[in-house]
Image 1 (spheres, one colour):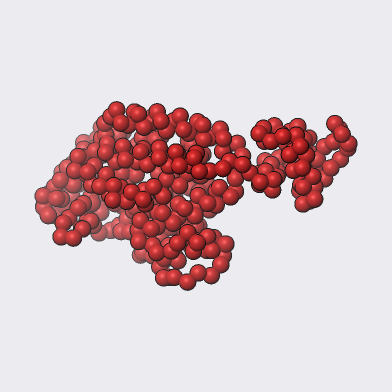
Image 2: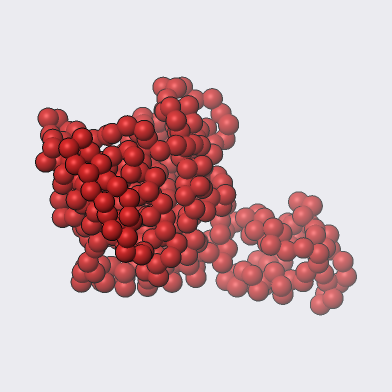
Length: 352
């Protein structure tokens, strides 16, 4: 065990030169301050190739899907994301159960599993409330995500923790006294480095798991926060449930974390996560129908527009629809009471 603790402490010193004491029962050392320094990883040919592939797919997918974001697509992603992320942690509820809970219907199941889902729904329905570069926001999210599930939700752990599988110690987390300083440094890295968002999100995910700042909920917080970091630069990630593929490759997920621990850098985990994101984009583009219904188009438009508008303005937002489809949409909008029609022919305007 002492060897494991020593290895863990030395790994911390490599990652975070922040000028604070690192302690254990048998060891105490002071890390030297060296300004903002990124956690260790290498840019491999695999990483470069994956970033190129992801960037190409993000450009294509964003052009097709984000000009007219579908409420249906957002809901489907939320259900898949919550189901996958919580299933990794042992939650037994199905996508059908989660759908019912989102729709405020009664569900039969273990209270703990239902509470986990309700907490996650609270988070994923209001992602815009959380700031990815803010430690305060991070703790606020943990408080909501783990409400009623663990003592001290929203606060860093105050005891040592280790991950044991079978009879083997797989990971010894840093001493609890050092967690606030380590997390502050990690958020400083997040705020002030100019690294690619795709890489930075993976590094944060891995390093947060390594620090293990909470008694429980670390895994789901790592996946949630990577989504938030990515979503800030690439809004498409609100619609991309890459947690589903993590769930499907769960063994590889934990292997990538463990191998990165042994290597003393996040390179292996970055390669794994970028591959997951790339495959998720392939699946998203292949299986998602970007066509919106008439009501979805109308709902989206009136939430972006105030006052009056013409049919031409409507078609400028939905460039893929025909003139006849636009006319049918607008007629339905009048029937539904979304707006009123004034004028005739080329002088017609619609007043919201």
